[in-house]
Image (cartoon, rainbow, N blue to C red; front, side, top):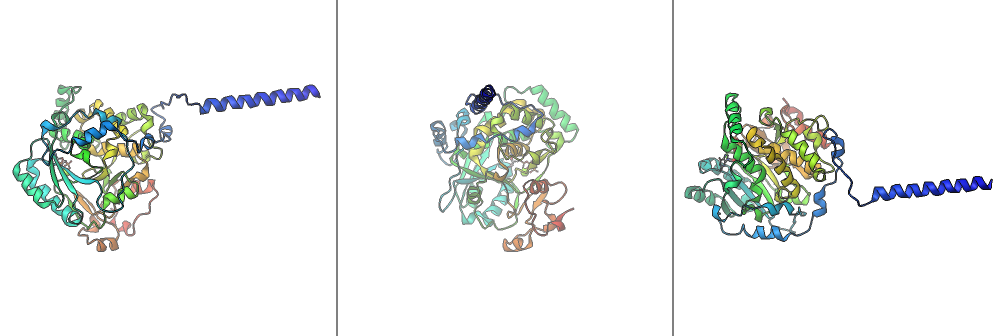
Length: 425
Ligand SMILES: Nc1nc2c(ncn2[C@@H]2O[C@H](COP(=O)(O)OP(=O)(O)OP(=O)(O)O)[C@@H](O)[C@H]2O)c(=O)[nH]1
Ligand SMILES: [Mg+2]
């Protein structure tokens, strides 16, 4: 009996030490390999957002870059600080939320001098519906010098400061790893297949610039929030609140009004690059990401849903964060801006879908908007009346078959606004 007891005690002690050992190994700070297989997206969904940990720390390297943007209203290429590598170490701080008054925000427009009359239309809309009450700045960027007429006429319309910057050459040209012959053949082939902008070099520079560089232009470095405005857009409703403040108060990082499916021919391999990024940088993937909005098969393939980026209100610090920069650089190295015709909309959208938690992305139902050929018109009639909207609700794209907003509502378990059934096709 005594021998039996001793044996039981030995077993108990052995089990205790075994459990202790397992606990020690599993909670050890020794890094464990965490590279998921390219087919196992379920695991990627569980990664923690590394940005959170970095929030709130200051970075002297970044602060010194910040100061260089403050050199006057018209920015010249000679003074542009194009070495932005220090940005990769920049933190992604929590949004600043002043008790009252304006946010640290600006409108931003990339335009050519020839876009003058079309951008004037957009400015008038934005000022009348919103900015005349707020006087936010407006930053214009161009790969060429803005001419005097452009500067004079746009400045006259803007109630905040109008500022003009020239994009440095290396943000608007082929990176050295691009095979020019191969890129040329792609343009010729796309021209034959009549793919929209498929033969254009400047459109590709534009898309690459909007994907990876606009937010690190010296003038933009001074701001925390941006609202992108393109030529010939319409704002249909009063914007009776400050969307920048709304974003900060509700911990939003990126926002949209329209979403849809991208032309497949322009992005055949973008998802391969995105998968490569996920594999190489699991630490950047947000825990509660929107992968299921981007993919219908748990990440195997891209369903081509994207937020339409001609309208964007977003946080610049996110775009300047290590996570986004790593994402952009992975894509850029693969060359799809030139070997295909990757748009900045799918690039921003895949980034938002993977790097942000779903509740950090906001759908601005109240902002009535048009960019050829799609309309976002608030669904609810009372809202349209309160906001003095001028859009025809039957034009509202949100609930039509080619929109991805339906999917966004489903994923986030959001209640559709009253009247949405009348606007389906
Ligand atoms: N400076 C400059 N801006 C450009 C150039 N190409 C396009 N842009 C700007 O980049 C933004 C996107 O270009 P868009 O031509 O509107 O592209 P899109 O919205 O896909 O196509 P659209 O349906 O034609 O509007 C706009 O703000 C343009 O003014 C360019 O070569 N130089
Ligand atoms: Mg456009």
